[in-house]
Length: 322
Image 1 (cartoon, rainbow, N blue to C red):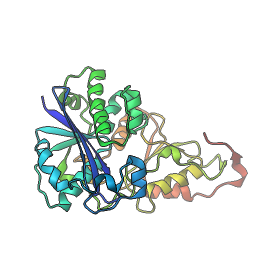
Image 2: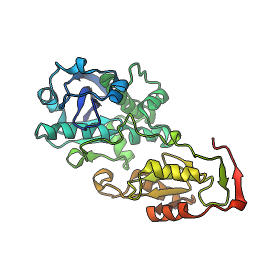
Image 3: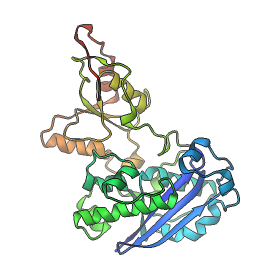
Image 4: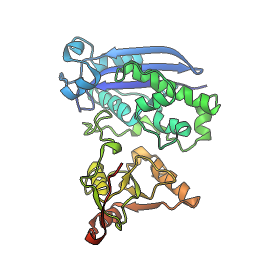
């Protein structure tokens, strides 16, 4: 039975190599067998106030701690392919790891990783809130000190174990064999930008995006339609696109369901979506379409055409969006 290691990084700034703490939880035979927690001095000595407000670490807490390259020899044996590496919002944590390795010019072996969001979706459903806190509450997992690296890594490990138990599946290998659309990715293809424009802490939630009006054209094709975005848009970022859609009365959702009306596809990063070249949202939407659900998969140009349609003053009605 292949074990797994749950990890969680905290960063000192938007720079992807600015790791300032790391929690690791080692699981073998479905039991937590070891835990590690490291404070580390960021590669560049700085602490962004917004990041400090999230995890509570100040420069004084890390200034005399070793940097990443001094810690790596103590943990590198977990990243040699013998374990799955697991994280919640894995693109962020594995991106930090890759950036730290690159910054210090450290080579590593290949290993596979997966994210607990699609893993737990098979239990709580993809419509459920994606945050670590919300998923912990769903599975009744205590989260006493959110954004502490070890506490978050421990919850991440428990999310995997509780999912196995909920489905009555004994191993991770069997679980991902049964649910074979869960992305299992190779670390070598991880996309690690120099900075995270939107970190896992500061990204805008769909639920935070509200329309700037309560008066809508009820004949507009987006009015009262549930829409989901997937991929990167070229004309504007997804937050702005979502805000534009909301101003036409659209109902914004973070995941595809039977109630979805439109899935708007941007450019997919092949390194992230794997060999299929499709995001999990697109795969699910197509599966639901095949089952007879009326979901339209459209592209950025089609979306721009929809939001470019002029409002009809005759059909303007006031409605408070909830």
